[in-house]
Image (cartoon, rainbow, N blue to C red):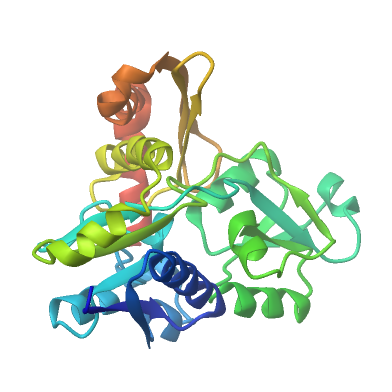
Length: 307
């Protein structure tokens, strides 16, 4: 065990928390580690909506390049930020046990605005569409940056609230008291899970990371990401997916949804299947969505994002 595993991460507080979490687990197993922080384009360019940046992999690209160049051995990501197709030579090495999958609303003042006019901030098309679907009279504004930056922008703004992933705020103790759970909102595929990637040819590191893998989380996130991949084919769209394993019944409960950008149209699926059907569940669920109006909706979304 003489090799030091170099852990690549973005330099935001949450990303560093995730990297230190993986570092501790590897150290506990007897591995030597070093953390190397890198700034990503997604963190630097904050004045453009994400979908204008040719989004796929904006937060992971810098670390991918550092791995391919041999500057770092592994990278730790929020799994929902990782494109469904990894670069050649880079593989999924471990999925850590999932935290909360919930989206939450952090609000300013009180919640009276939910029954009248309101302005909500989010950089996510999925959250925007679901919010407008439930609150069609509200306005949704773009909000970018890491969680600390977004929280600060909310406090300095005249918005009524902003939507965050509960897991991210909980990990760095940033979850305030003025929040509500949005349990009606279907999360992003793999929300709340952390992914560690490594180089395919690096057997030593892959073997080390395999000991951190949480099999149940690996399976449910695989289903959700397969659903996403089958639906979107590399374009950003308002897509939510959540797979849950029921141990008593040995079944998977899957919910998937595709919205129009304005939230007025949606195609959804909600089904329970035996665990042994997990490998194709995401694919078949996406096919069902596409056949029920999803194909038309996806082409409209692509056309609207080009404008």
